[in-house]
Length: 273
Ligand code: SF4
Image 1: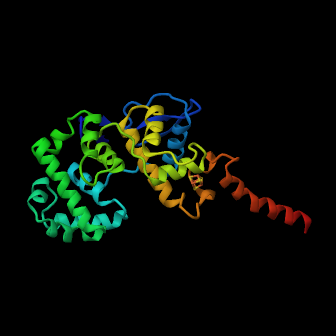
Image 2: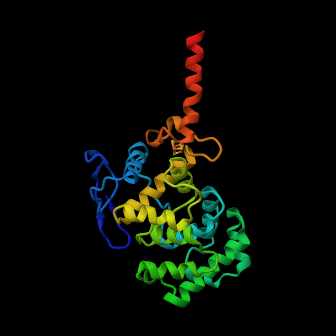
Image 3: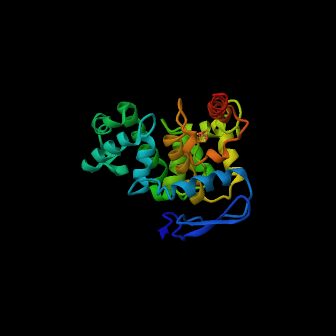
């Protein structure tokens, strides 16, 4: 069982309705308001969830640590962010007040492992200044703001773009916003769900309009996409053969055609031998 950090709801294991209306395997995922909507996106969720299990995102001890991680993870791997967060924790700097008081140069040294450390130190400073000015330094008070208003405010802070703002809202504040990243764009594009180069807001709306409005579902869905993207849907050489989403790759997609081609020529070669 898990406790929802924002509203204290208790999550329970429950059967996930499948896109075909049947009831799938019971997953240990707290989904409070899953409704029976037959749509393609839930089939994607179901396929990844069945194959990969619960993701337990975001790996952090407090909402403020989630916020720090969301800022530091820009343009770097999570392993590097963990090193920077370990440094901040060892220096007792994982609080808004400590970061507010610290010299930017000292902060930069501590977050050096995350790359672009001078810029990231300035971004952390900008966020805690915003928090102090608008919410008296209280993360809890900040997350009591209405989602859209807070999203606009976060987007106005130096160094916080849509993906970072939405990660903060969803993973630190349990607000209903869907996080879109490069893996989301890549998977949707390769599966022909989106064409061309849709912008961030278009893809965010695509998920938010079609899925049950459930932050727990959206939390898990994004984490599953990241896992699938990282391990299978790689930029240059996708590993479709054993990917959890293989059965959902349309046969007409260029990628599926490419994957089928060698087997067909191999079997033709075998038949003529
Ligand atoms: S099946 Fe292939 S294209 Fe689809 S998500 Fe997996 S690796 Fe990417």
